[in-house]
Length: 419
Ligand SMILES: Cc1ncc(COP(=O)(O)O)c(C=O)c1O
Image (cartoon, rainbow, N blue to C red; front, top):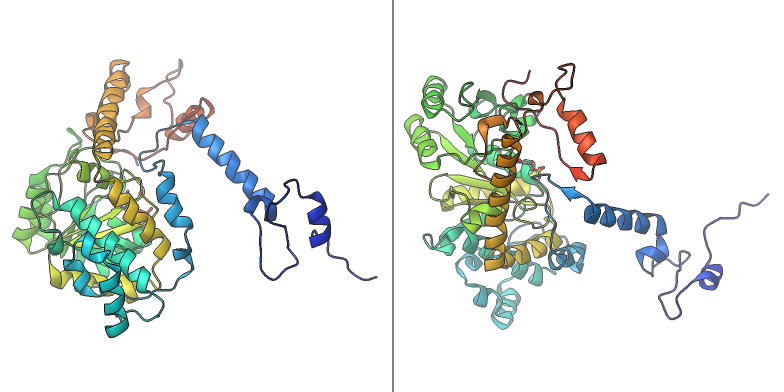
């Protein structure tokens, strides 16, 4: 018997199409026309469910943000269709936004001199990446640094690849690197044994002081002097207090180490002035762009040192990645524009204020906070301080599941002292 495909034909799809004048469903055409709802109603429905979930629930996950629709428009844009391995012309780093957006000059230059990319057809990709780099530099210039002297790479696909590229640029496999342990609040890429960082480098982990649960700079200094790391990482995933960037730099200088500031969580707060900036203290700064910054999923690396920036660029491409996601870079340019507004600043300050307020209310209820509190957008509850009538302590996993059922979304995390 001949096999008859079950997928809708152009004919019967047209018959069942509910909207007059809407694009025709044509799954038998070699070009796929029609909306997602037309072509794949199952995925369209799942997206609707997820949108409704996000509206219905109170989401308290510190690493998530509701990204403005305008930013997501860039993600959906035709910049998605490009390959653009390489970087825009370095001269654009010294250009202002108006100069970067001067199409006559940019396109004439492109026609005359070409550009350093491996693919052609990138005249607009060059402009969008130059714009994202410039806006990022402006966000971190803080009225103190010339944006033309802040060297930015906007290509890392996410925070982990950004950190991996920095390892590649600054240290060699086997070199000693010092970062906060995962249990105390560091990230996987700060030397966890299950991560590439922990497998390829000699890791010395620092913790918080067991009594105060805060960073102990004397202890960190002693550890650095004993092990003489090539790189020290500060900036955390769940430690809720800002590090003293100046003290970290002094320790790094004392032992001849690079200081990497990983401000993945707090980049939005830093831009808004709600958290101290490591720019000018750290040799290199990395951050994800989808947490407090509320941009697309991605990451940036920045440095004030031009020679380091060249090593970092090479470590990202071709060292770590192939083609950049130009659609993400377009969305990032918009996120950096929004991050310079007064509304964004107010939002970031309000987030820190809300975090402190909720932390206090919970502490007043007798709930213990790991690290003893917060001065940022996040805090961590010590679930062991919540006990059942028979004295059984609450586990973080169970707590997160109960909260989710009650409409509050949170994540479980290790805290200092966990095994
Ligand atoms: C401090 C820190 N660095 C790096 C990352 C990695 O980011 P991504 O998950 O985007 O790879 C995270 C993510 O949680 C983080 O908290």
